[in-house]
Figure 1 (cartoon, rainbow, N blue to C red):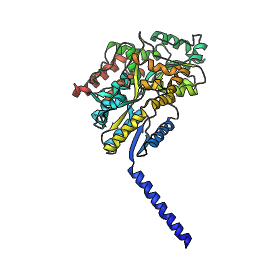
Figure 2 (figure 1 turned 180 degrees about the vertical axis):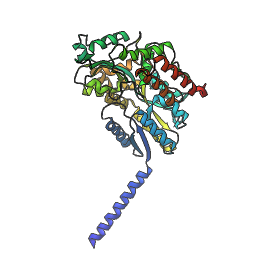
Figure 3 (figure 1 turned 30 degrees about the vertical axis):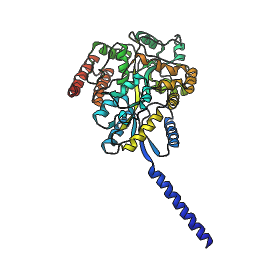
Figure 4 (figure 1 turned 45 degrees about the vertical axis):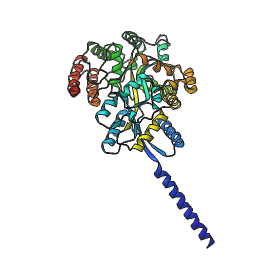
Length: 430
C-alpha cells in the first residue's frame, strides 16, 4: 500500500513536471527558419549548431530550422507557404529576390521592427551588400551569406603545361591562352581536361553573365530594377566571348556547364579553371588533392565580378511575437562572431567589417589568404541581375544565354529577343 502511495505521488509529480514542461513549451515563440545550401560541405550541421546556441541563450524562443534545397527551391517553398497562410518567420533567400518578394507583398521591412539602438547594428554592414537590401528607402532584408564570384585555378595543371603556377589570368586574352595550354585531349580528340568552365544553367548563368558583361564595361540593368540593356553591343560581345570559349577556342565544355558539377569537375581534374562562388572555398580546400589558387576575375580590360549570395527576410504574416523573435535571431546570425565562423566554414564573405576584425577570422585569413580574395574584389563588383518580376525576367535572360551557348540562336538574336520580352514584362513599372 505504501508502495502504491509512493508510485501515485511519483505519478502526480511526473504529471506536474510534464505540465510544467508543456507550459514552458507553450510559452515559447516558434520561429520557422527556411534556409538553402548552395555550396558543398556538411553545412546543415553548422546551422543546427547556431540554432542550439541561440536557443540556449533564448529559452523562450524555439527556432525550427528547415533545410529547403537550393536557393530557387527555398524561394518557391517560402512563397508557397506564405500564400497558403503559413509563412516562415524568417528565411535566407537570394538578395536578387527582393523585388519579387515586395511584389508578392509577403515580407516585412526590417526597419519596421527596429528598436531605437538598432541603427548602429545596421551601420556595421558593408555598404555594397546593404544596398541590395534597400528599396524605396526601406530596409527589406539583412545581408547574411554574401559572396563575389571568383576564379579557382589548378596550379599543378598550370605547372604541367609549362605555365607559371602562381600566375593567374588577368585578362580575357590571358584566360584563353592559359586555357589552350592546359586543355588536354586523348588520341581520339576527346577532351581529358578542359581549360575553363563557366556554369551556364538557370540560377547561375545570370550571375556569371553579369560579371562577364561588367568585365566588358557593361551593366545589364538599372538600380531601380525597371530597365535592362541586353542589346548594348558590349553586352552582346560578352555573350559572344562566352560562346566562343567552346566553339572557337575549344577550351570550354560544349553547351552548358552545370553549376552543381563544377566543383567536382575541378576537384577531379576535368577542368583546370572554374568560375564559381567564394562560398565553395572550404569545400574545395577540404577535398582538393592538388595545389590550387583563388583569383579575382579577368577583365576586358578591367577585372570585375558580381556581388551575390543571400539575405535574411522576415515574413509579413508572421505574428508580432514571431517577428520580434525573428529579428533577435537575425541579429545573432549576423553578429561578428557568427559571421566570422560562417565564413570559415563556407568561404562566404562575412558582410560586416567587424567580423574581419575577430581573432578567429584574422587567424584564418593568415592561414588561408585565398579567403580574402572575394572581399578585396567587392570594390570592382557590380550588383547581380535583378529587376521587378525577377523570376520572369531572369528566365528570359537565362533562356537567351542557353540559346546562345547551345547554338540555338546567335548571341545578338538571343539577347534581342530577351530584351523585347523583358521590356514587355517591365512595362507596368515604367
